[in-house]
Image (cartoon, rainbow, N blue to C red):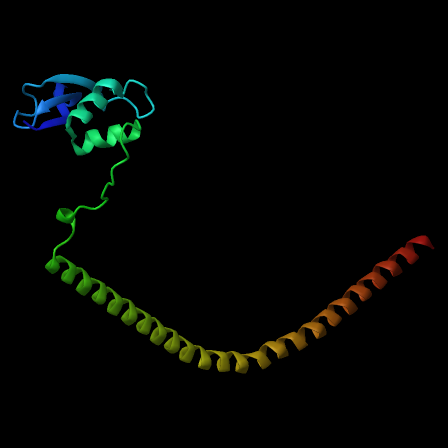
Length: 182
């Protein structure tokens, strides 16, 4: 008779509650057990003291008799420092992608890299074409610059004419004032 320390499920639908029991390994999960040695309530937060309750003395007794803990119960016992913490594999082999899937992923990555390189090359070509179009525009702007300079030269002449007109108006107004004073 091989003994197991394992979880026995209880509770309502979608509201699990587990008993940690010592049972014959041939018995069903929720079937007959020898002794209940603790409880586990996954619905409580991890910090809550009632989440995992263990009867340390009885667990040590059953481990001494030869009972083997299940993976989950061994983890609980390791956290409670009753036994050394078991090594937990992070990625099981069953969930690893198969050879064809890995091959498809590599092909997808290669296609994505090729597309990125093509996009970069296209962007460089567009930039080169834009630079080529800007060169004649700059030359045309250079040709228009003398026209703007000529307009700038005319502006001071217009300003000077405007100043002379304002001086003449001031003189005319000043003359009227002199006539009024006499």
